[in-house]
Structure formats: structure tokens, C-alpha cells
Image 1 (spheres, helix red, strand yellow):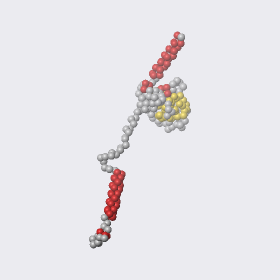
Image 2 (cartoon, helix red, strand yellow; image 1 turned 135 degrees about the horizontal axis):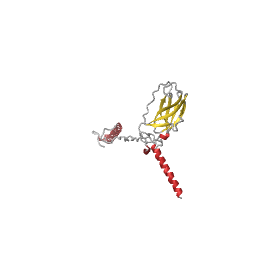
Image 3 (cartoon, rainbow, N blue to C red; image 1 turned 90 degrees about the vertical axis):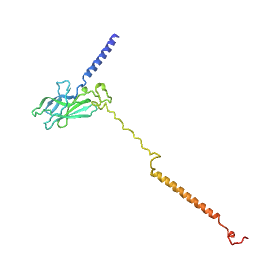
Image 4 (cartoon, one colour; image 1 turned 180 degrees about the vertical axis):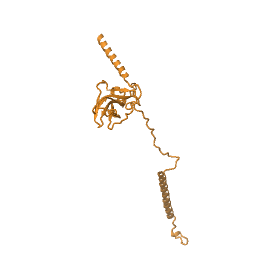
Length: 228
């Protein structure tokens, strides 16, 4: 039983030390860039086998190389979402047209979520790919992990800026009083008024006709006619 607990203790300590080591590898300096250790051989490009790790992250602002070659090589930095985040050019000969074989270095802009850097020749053929994810503190998992250095500046895929939605504008409802009446209201009242006027005139005409009929004097009652 004691041996079992001792083994568990060793495992926990190992994980803890590994976590500290990983934290120590975090990029804690501003404006980093990549430097790659390569080997050139008559147009071909390889990772330098003398380096166990084929690249480094250096505290240096990336400055594009001044190209004098007619057909420069190209590099692409690819993130963990397989998106090309930056492209750079370099001359494997370093301006020396007689250089045909030997070691060289190439610099590239750093990507906090970098997965790999692909290198191409002047014809667009991919020659070598070097993985850089072990120096990336942004993992593109959709969660903003501030304890590992992710923020809205360095890790925009995980730490998205919160956008305030535009205010909702309520539709304007015309008030029933106060303002001038609308065209529809005027038409309705005009029709009602016209109908009332016509109805009144028609009723007056019927009344007058009936009144005239009820006051007709019979001939026997006219002056000059004797009463029978």
C-alpha cells in the first residue's frame, strides 16, 4: 500500500514539474519572430539535421528580407485552423549566386496560434514543412484562456471582442389627438357628412310631399260653390 501511494505521489510531482516546464516555454517577450535552421542543396531545402528543434522564437521584430534574387523562395505561416496567417519571402542563397550547398537561416513572423511553416521554391513547389505548435500559446479551441496569455489582441479566434448590439428603435405610432388629421380620416368624415346631408335632404323632401298632399282643398269647399 505504501508503495502504491509513493507511485501516485511521483506521478503527481511529474505532472506538476511538466506543467511548470511548459509554462516556462511561454513567449513572455514582445514582438517575437521565428528563425528556422535550414540546409540548402542545389535548389532543394531541408530542415538542418544538426538541430534537434529546427527553429527558435527570438525577441526580435520581424523585418521582411530585402530580396535581390530574381526568383526568391516563399514561406507560409499556417495556424491551428489550417489558415495561412502570413506569407514571407527569402533568398536561400543570401544574395550569393555561387552558393549551391550549405546551412542557412530564414526568419518569419511569429503566430501565437501557429501550427507549421511551409517553405516553397520559386516555382511554388513545397520543399519542407516545420511544425511550430509547441511554442504557440493560443490553441484556437474557442475558449479564451487568459492564464496562458490569450487575449483579444494575441488570440482573436478564442477571445472575441464583445460587440454591443444596436439599440432597438420602436416603431412610431401616430397619436390619436393633437396633430392634423390624416387623409384617410378626412375622407371618412367627408363620406359620413355627405351621407348625413343627403339623408336629411331626402327625408325633408318626403315630408314636404306628404304635407302638400294632406292640405288639398276639395272643390266643394272652394269659394263660390254652394254647399249641398
